[in-house]
Amino acid sequence: MKPEFDIICMGMALIDSIVKGFDPTPISASGYRAEEGSLNIGGEAVNEAIAAAKLGMKTGILCHLGMDPAGDMVVSALEKCGVDTNLVIRSTDHPTPVTTMLVNDDGSRMSVTNRSHKYNFRPDQYIDRISGTKAIILGSLFRAPFDDDGIVRSVLSEAKKRGILVFADTKIPNFKDLKLSDLADCFSLIDYITPNEDEAKFFTGKDDPDEMADIFLRTGVKNVIIKLGSQGCFFKNNDCSVSLPAHDIEAIDATGAGDNFIAGFASEILRGSTLEKALSFGNACGAICTTAIGAGTALRNREQVEQFLKGV
Image 1 (cartoon, rainbow, N blue to C red):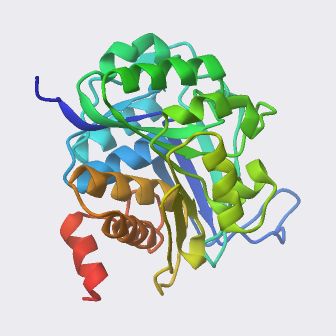
Image 2 (image 1 turned 45 degrees about the horizontal axis):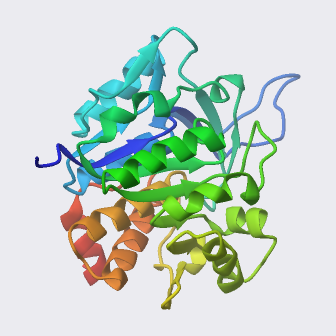
């Protein structure tokens, strides 16, 4: 039977309240100013699903949303971008998470999470829903809902039984004290893992991307991509390594750049592109993302990325 989806993105869905140009100097006892503020849908699974859909992939999303206006906003935006929302789980168990993002002038950012980020659904209870896809993207290993060894193992084992390609991003844990070894037994089931430089340092204790990648490879993961921000990205598996420089752009907001990267990379792998082309394409998707406020604002379609790569 032909797969129903090219990609199903799994993980966190939320609202980002983005404050850009925050001025820490108070104007009154409790009043502060900022350059601008906006509400954007976010969460790793959401960002990745929107990017993949814009790039022409038939995309679904498996996530949890509350029965609240924030959840309605996420569903509406997903559908507007062409993401199939039939796999979305909605309940009154807990509200849709809201993250406050403080974005600096150079595009760097800090985030404030709350307890609603801690409570999430059990994706292993809905594992039958991923059967009709070519690939899955786990939005955030080491954060809910993928901060539990049993849940991760159940989802990935079922994916591999069905011949589904597995892409996994990582995040530094925020509500659990986790180390690489806590989930490492699951890594042999992952085809591509994509930590950024800070995450790779946190999990490996190394500063050199080559050494970081080696530690991940020793867990059994097949391919490692270290996202290096303004320095580009570094790929390594047991056969080869590849370094790609970053694009020379003026970054406005780095929110979601890594999510756009993995969506772009995965989409090109599924199209049958070479490793080098897929890495270059993902790199470009991440760069384009940073040129506007919000994770899903700047990227429009595959043609835009191709033109960007040509320097047009």
